[in-house]
Image (cartoon, rainbow, N blue to C red; front, side):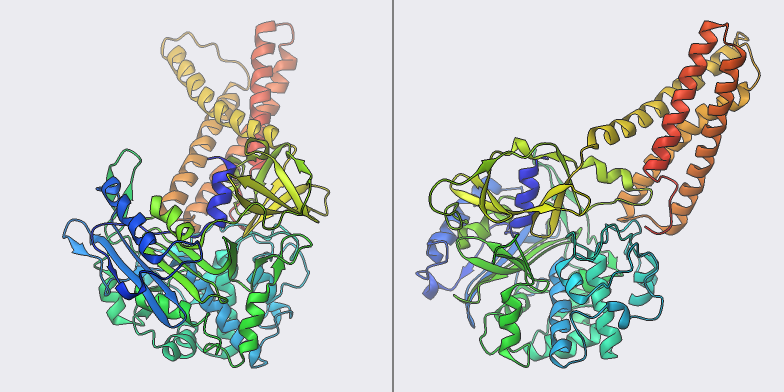
Length: 612
């Protein structure tokens, strides 16, 4: 995937999918959306896509509001294609990371009451010794959690489970899945589900209430959101729990085939980060609270104003990149909100406090579709490439080298995955500097904003919304090391087969140390299979399970030791047989292969199942 697609995925909100029937509020047809389209024109464009999408989507729900008035609601398609259950006002969808905004609202409420300091080290609020894998002793503040720059990489261990009875208490689950801290707090942004869930646990610690109970009492009930569940099992709202069982999730391939994933329910143990589930009406009600000047979620309207003022910015500009956990996005106007994705659903909630316009979108497809990528843009327009560009000529440049996203796995046995996402910046066109440490990429009259970064170790990078891309001058070498390791595992399988055939034909001539050298070949093969097993387990369970990780890690340690022993044996054999050119070449090849294997296993931490 090209980097521009990744950038667009980060800065664009989710959209909607369309099927058969929409129920607009006719009196609002002439309302003009921020993009310049009337609501009627917006609806017409969506309806014209319907024939092109037949058989390529499941369901979608979309709502547009302005202030306290709902302008448009549409229920499209079916939430269960087999039983032909239509999407309607009683359908519930998983809201994914929109759940995090409940955390940030809760935090600001406690801040208003003087119970929580946004700039205090969070260890002040957590149980003694709770954080066990910190690489830096610098304070981690709530602002770091809100801005996603506490320094953590992605979790190696799964933070969800398949059975409701396996869900652990929030504090226990988070401590058991703590990821590695790769960066000093405040230096690098890297979107963190774990960090947001930790903020939810801090709400528990500070308020003295179960997080789920707190959200119900201080957010859902005051707003009248009766059809929303917060708990990962949905047991806090039996009606939602029952309705969720009716929703199926689907995947549609580019060639038109579809997969029915059944209910596709996963129980998110770090539930403050992504387990909220509810109706379109409730999601719009929640969004409307942020465009209400009376700020019903806060004691003081000034708190809402502070939220929109920004907590992190693009370079030295006043353009916010994060607003206390809410994401501002530059369309024709600046909007705020959050999108969300689970394995079952996609969701989006955005709003503009100045015009009062907002949009909520819910779909039961993981991968998205045309509407997912375009509907929000149709309603809110695109950022003009001249909005922030100064008059006259601006400096343009093309970054060189490969860049790695900060949101990835950079410690532990899944570290290799972090090096599969490297991208070149020079294949997406010219960058244009529009301010101090701020630049934009032009796209057919529209633009994407980025911040230029310079890190303490001298490396450079770019920040866009919730992730940064850091240049890695040794990327090709690291990727080559991983490739050589995998090739060696394949070669070892062939060498072992050849050796077995020669032995069977009694044509194998054994030599001193032959058994250890053969064991080294087997170790390289087993190590490669172990890496494959880790990748499969990670994919199936949305992260490693601790027992499997420990088993694979121990196997990798044994493989490293055997390869190291085989390397020493090959060197000794090479010295003893230095007059036999064929033997010398063979042992030299074996020595190099074992060295590369040990190097790769050590560098990519294939043995490491702790502190990650």
